[in-house]
Image (cartoon, rainbow over the protein chains, first blue to last red):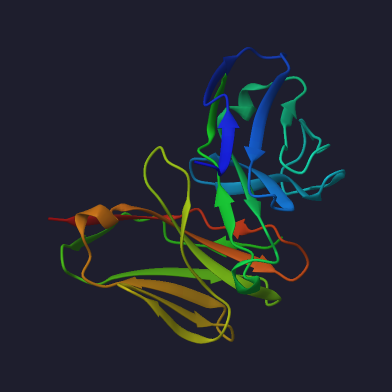
Length: 116
Length: 111
């Protein structure tokens, strides 16, 4: 079934290592988002992208890098992982033209990242 | 900074009762409002959206919006144990497509 997928689903890494989380969607949605979810903070926006080659910072972008060379992919890279980046990461996508203009976001299954 | 506030709960209701979940937001420019449900270990899934003042009903769920009071709520009628989850309120303004989420309210429906 098509949709939005994330890989890996679980990742354990060490402080200082570079880690890339992948996000792929098959709907051709123009917008894609990365959120992190931590206890007591809900979902916080890291970066988002309005289209290929257009990205913008969210609420908590420090320590993260994104790129979007193709509409369907939106990888998130932790350049030098820190313990504070231990979290669950969710990718989401939306299509402003759909759902009566309500711009519903659909979420991937998440990646649970542990930084030791 | 835009804020979305929710009581973290847990909110405990007996099976068959009405569960009332509340959310307030700080940005008067907010245009669209969303309720997501999230089961433990799973991703958020959309329950309802609302963008006009008043009530919007979908099955057992009713969303209520009061922009003057900057308040949005979700009512769940005939609550079932399967409704036990964390409910996330999210707000979108006209400036961008991203959502600002509350920290969620955990609902427990007791059989």
